[in-house]
Length: 171
Image (cartoon, rainbow, N blue to C red; front, side):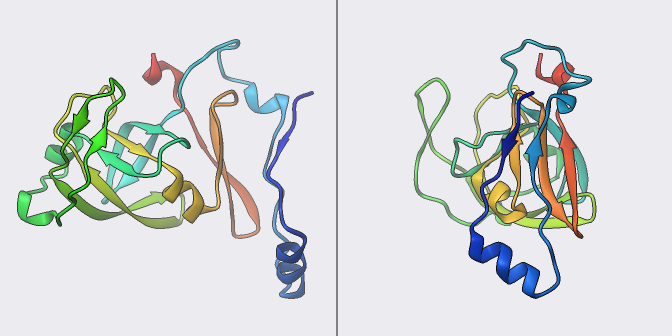
């Protein structure tokens, strides 16, 4: 049985217990692989509600430190250049090319009843994804992702909630 657990600081547990809010354990078990094609090396691609719209082909990338929005989503949300704020730092694409962002925009991402606002860097570059969500979103949601299990798990209302990846969308 494979188990991955999120380490929790003892002080965090004690302070939450003192407040009467036991934090659920975030773990991945073999049963979490049910419904996935195994073995695989697939990326974790999910559907999320971004800016009030259901958005498919969103890559969960825990190795990235910025959320990125690509042209399809930018156009689909009917955003305009004046909706963006300046973002001057260039990004490096998957191919190693330098990409100059068009700007950034703060938008809500809703998962279930939980809403987290993140800053998306808008780029004009091709991608098979509509957006990338990264460590800022994962950390704000207090989430843990697993490409092996094709899931994102996060604590909410005393329970473990999850976002399930779509391997067909990935392929």
